[in-house]
Length: 161
Image 1 (cartoon, rainbow, N blue to C red):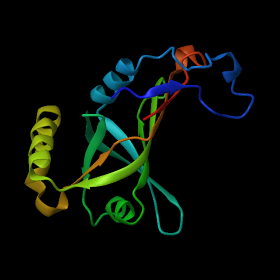
Image 2 (image 1 turned 30 degrees about the vertical axis):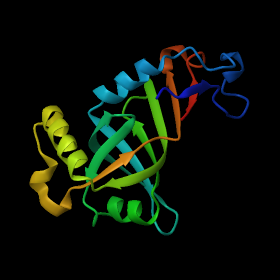
Image 3 (image 1 turned 90 degrees about the vertical axis):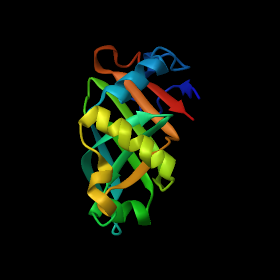
Image 4 (image 1 turned 90 degrees about the horizontal axis):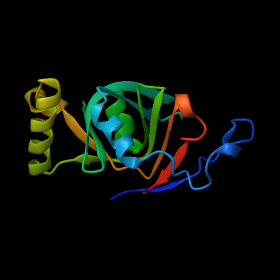
């Protein structure tokens, strides 16, 4: 499903007044390519006391979701269990992609096997080899913010799903 583009909402001063009102200058297919090609994805979770926790993970963009694994007993895993709302950001600030939404733990064996195979093709490692410490999670974003630094603000786009 292709999300709906729109303008990025922000305060005055960021130069977004010159951006197209419909946010249509950046193609979603371009954003999906950035997501698929990314090696590292920054995952931001929230601790019980409200502090943010950011960590890079390896992952995949597949079927409209960012799929990644982390030990459910890790700080990220505990945060995800208690507060599934997360932000995912790619490494690049030049080709920015920021995804927001609620993550789901993946337990379906068919999906886990597909993730394991795709992950192996990308990273030459199988998460399943880590046993129970390889919890798999998927973020189907509710909102995405994207732009290219070279053409900001004309490429700044807020996508809704």
